Amino acid sequence: MRASRGVRTPKAFVKPVLAAVFGASLALAAVPSFAADSGKITIMVGGITKLIYLPAKLTEQLGYFKDEGLNVELLSQPAGVDAENELLAGAVQAVVGFYDHSIDLQSKGKEVEAITIFGQVPGEVELVNAKSRDTIKSMADIKGKTLGVTGLGASTNFLTQYLAAKHGITSAQFSVLPVGADNTFIAAMKQNRIDAGMTTEPTASRLINTGDAAVLVDMRTLKGTVDALGGAYPASSLYVQRAWADTHKEEATKLARAFVKTLKYIRTHSAAEITEKMPKDYYANNKALYLQAMQNSLPMFSPDGRMPKDGPETVLKVLAAFNPNVKGKHIDLSKTYTNAFVDAANVPK
Image (spheres, rainbow, N blue to C red):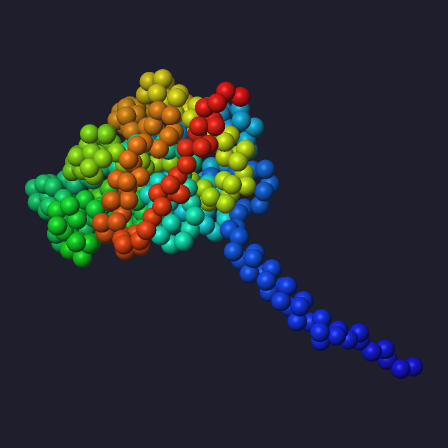
């Protein structure tokens, strides 16, 4: 018997098919990747125990995600820049991190928007090592010094460079060391690996209480922030890829509603009442100190989740002063945030 011959495809048919496949591949490549729509929303927090990101865990503790019918998983990365990378890779649907990432990412062609603002100010504190207090009286004294940040490209790094630039000091005149947050930051300070560094509560209060550090620049309050940066500086926020928000409006509105309820809870309850809602392991074996840090942090939070007026302009000014990604670039601030979901969340169901 003769072996049967394979079916031959006409050449005239091959080119159109290949063109169609190639075109489809290009189209798929242009679509942002998202974690699979399993019904679960995964949120990466840039350091879940930091009080600047308090609304993330507090919302879970208060049961507001469940009240909205949401299945939310909270994960943690010590630096906001790492959380941002998880979002862009499509591994998570949202990030609780600093709003300034939305501006930085737009300069790189990435469309990300903040849909709920948690903090009207950075909540960051530049601390000086106790052993360097006599030589570092202000940011004007940091030439030749080593300054700690949570990570290279993180918001703490942006702000550190800006505060130095205000005193005419370039990034080449001091060293930046990524030391993470919480215990790793404390260790770097106690081991004298950094002369000063930027951190948040409750880490700041822990180091101040033990006498290992003192406040150099305080951006936990609106006044301190205006003095340091020249205006309100919207910081901690919930941000997502715009394409995800456009295709998941219901979920985005429910997330905004849950967080707005939490911000209202923060505004109407005492530091002690809020502390009681938090996991005990957040106290770091010192509930009284955590309560003090909580009290220090409450003024930073937004009352309603909306972007503060002129806030984006202040953030852009800070980034454009030194960040090569942003400097000289046209940034459409209207595409870096939206109040639409918060506004919808404030409408009674």
